[in-house]
Length: 112
Image 1 (cartoon, rainbow, N blue to C red):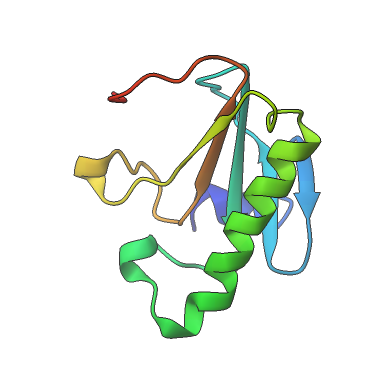
Image 2: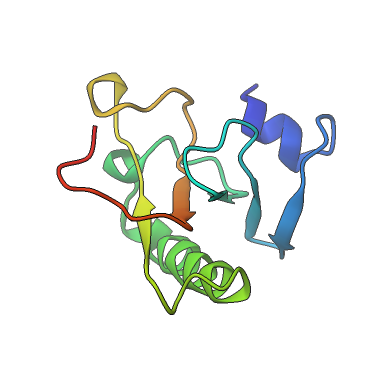
């Protein structure tokens, strides 16, 4: 069982900022920016690379929730970054799709 599933199940506490039947958003415990929130699907999907056409609605929901969370956190005026990592080489540490909402500082390019 992934750490994210344990958060979804309530076994591990999280500072939740949004939750509905499909998606959960909570503050990252190791923030990489002043605002760092993770948005995860409650349906287990390893990554975007593992998603299929049946996941289209939840993938869209993830992005819409990420944008709403960014607005709620006051990030829209100055901008923010959405990131999802795919595979170990792409920086994915946990086998559950998640979108990072990062803001509150100037983002640089290229990242990493």
